[in-house]
Image 1 (cartoon, rainbow, N blue to C red):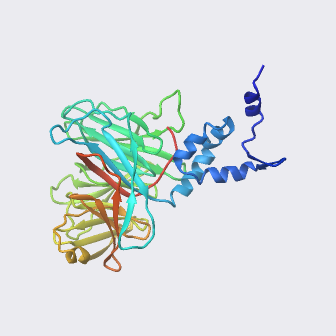
Image 2: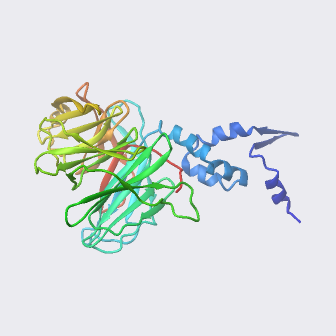
Image 3: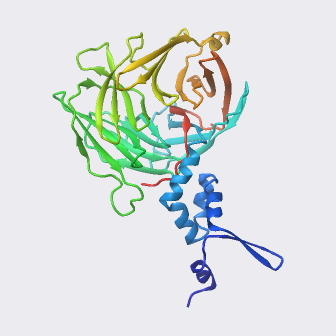
Length: 398
């Protein structure tokens, strides 16, 4: 015989019921869904325990996609840090810590934001020689590379759900990049493997959503390509279904190209880099500038070059140069790094020596529009190796 609680769950239609005096009122299911998808992700995870109906609703593809649509309009500041101790660069306890906070659009000279902490306990480093090398982010999903002397590991991480997936890999000279196909609503991983004879093979696999019993990864599919380039390391950005990263020309040690990968059609293309004085080094950042790929390079004297890919088919670049005058006015010898852009086209820069202070620079007005101080990073001896100002919460599971 079923208990009263079991009978209530069977009859539960997902509506919220309120009791006042002798009258019972119910909030309709469609309104309940609208309320739920506007809640923070942490609340949604807790409310999955309310009833089977609510769990089914919040785990459905429709609800996850609806939540994502709202989440894209609520960008967050995001920091990804690896533990580093001054006496030992290796720790196997919580090696990856993520911090985030809502990015307010309020205009103010000085804002103070408090970060929330996201532990990633399922990500482990297995030996002292391994370091977190790189990270690219797509719609709140991270693709992280961990490299050692004899191994290279790759992980798919969702800081919102704390889910961590290790991507099977047996190659040492290998790189992987995450992309998203909006038309088919698919996340894909591009893999580049170089042989000892310098031949290169590209392949791609699809992340399978909601796979509980079977693998979260499809089999690798070969990408037909005869393009030649040498990849070492650069930023990776995915814009409108295309993954971009920088690489050296195969026949040159001074000229570089932009490699583009169409996620939907799984095609590779080389784009000639602009002719301006832009170098492929740690100061070159690939960014999403108002929906287009851009290269942003800041010199030591705070002069900058912004090259925007205006026409990908004709490979036309538009260039803007200037000086970040506000930093000169500060009279501080700041070394700045770029960590992305806002939808309004503000460049977000940070100094590695003071990672808790960010500047949002308006290139059109040539001034710092906002100066933000972030609070809440209390862990000591940590190395922040990835920053983003367009991170979003994503409740999808793989």
